[in-house]
Image (cartoon, rainbow, N blue to C red; front, side, top):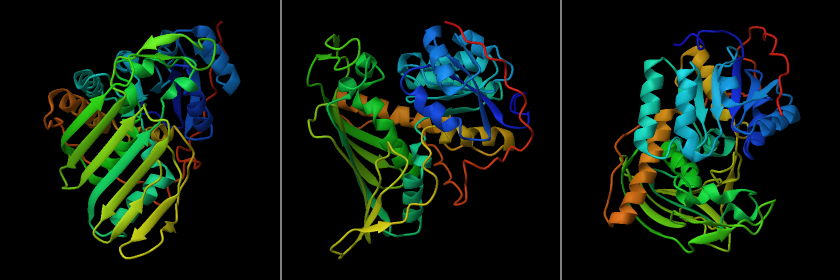
Length: 385
């Protein structure tokens, strides 16, 4: 364990990347007594300062400023996908544990380098999505483990809509390498499927791109066009090493917005909550029944940041964290295999087989102060811009 991980008390956290998603993380992380949010960084230091002030974070500046803070033990990397590996590497070389947004990198080889360097330095790597740690998916895991649908046989997932350009003020990166519906939305579904059924053994896929150009729909750039460099509709067949099969559709080309996640077993079917959310509902249709029955959803539904908290507790206590870099690497390999299959019209295989993360204990409480040493005083406010 690194020197940072050997400390006691709440874990000092900094965010790198002050874009749209940072507000969701800050809202959640600020409510966890086991975490102290100390700094916000961005290449646009004025934006970092604005976000820090809005959320009462004491330090803001450029990435180098944040990485130099000795109080920061864990960096939450919220940059655009193209910068994920670079920022994670910088954090690791600064002696920080790192938790990143999805995908962990643009290519598996980049992710493998980050994980290898972190391991050499005794540092932890975690990665979004952590939605599978929410009450909805954890309740689904417990229902499957309890045999509510018998033995799992197959799963079917669909997520489709018209893409994020209608609401996002700067959506071009969603349509560059590392984006598209597969890399943007796919991690939620694929991570949940791996948590449920274990590693993927092989995939087959087809893909399409409806338009080569799209337009920003809101904000100061409204009306500006940008190129589409990735497929915007992907259909995949997925086989797990456990023997379960799944079909999945990821699309930015559909006017009706739909999500579906169903698991079929020998004794019934489970309708799983949208894995891009943390709550319910969770419904069961036993074989021969005429109506779906709602199952209880137990646990907290705090939002983005549960994986950061689980990782913070793990680095203090030495347990394995669940939204791990190894899990994220496998999901990236699966998405890369899906892309390769669509290009080559053949089954392809990911390179690793991860151990599925352990379910959260039924009494796991994000609001509990498990790291009970007194909090040191935070750094004095330092905002730039």
